[in-house]
Length: 455
Image (cartoon, rainbow, N blue to C red):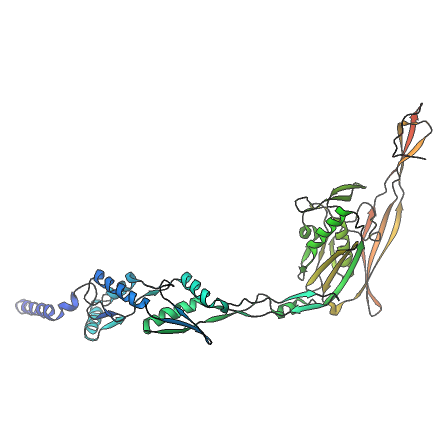
């Protein structure tokens, strides 16, 4: 095209754009004419001017009456007490962005449409969740009903009694907040049902049933002298630690881990314990009777024994070969739940008796018999000790000592009168204790200790 002709045409085009398109290319103010926030016109205004108008709009919205309902109950809610605010900066940012995004041609189209038809954008409403929660709880907090877990207990007849679970409900604050913020944009008077959501308990009635605890598997009782106060106290402390223990299938139970250290801080007192073949006073005396009673209940429940060690001397409260000693950090009693269902342990201490009961799936319960016997007697040594406090020819027994034993134990499983199997348990060795006799060496009579017996 000839430049002489093109130049005037270009000049004419610029004049047309200026006359008819300047208002679209360079609209007045920060916000396009025709833009409204809700029912407030902000078109053609600078952002500071629009912000003042939105403050007035916010004051108006704060006076919108709100009624919360649930069934036939209702509560008035003030938007001031829930911290309702317009996010003025974000709202103005959105208003100012109208017709200023995308390619120039698209911007011009939007600007033309807004100028002709107008555009309403909604303010960005914020309600303080914490204030809303507090306000609604103060008015309708009773709608929050906690779920109740299913549970079970053992009655006096050793029966399993299940307490069913109950579903709860809670006010859905997040949903209420969203609905309230939305309703503020479209209503001049708000009536809002309080949304609630169902709360499922952590443990349902079916969960209890799935545990498979249906009855008593075994029970074993040992006796103790209640006049020995410290020993009795220690037995109660250890037994209480076991009481209510739930054992899931396959779980290995450590007596030491469940009962914990036998220390004064844990509440234990000094009582008689067997250490190095002697009965001495030490913290936690009596705890071994609890582990032993548990051991026998475990055997009778046909559970797997993982770790067990006998005392160095026989004990009086169970037949020989059926004791289980424990020393925290050194010697433990362990068993595994190989029943395939959950187990529940109950203990009872009173009237000089300690009882351990194990509950589980009684549908497959079998008769269990425990036999134990002495396989070998280990004779004691007789040791003579010279004593200058005794005259020559005199002898005094300072320590009676005792024989030792090797004992064997077996577990017999019986069903319908027939022996299903016999479990040979590890042998128990009880050490002999020397008999010590004091032999006099004095030529003349000396004072003789009153606690020695002359033979």
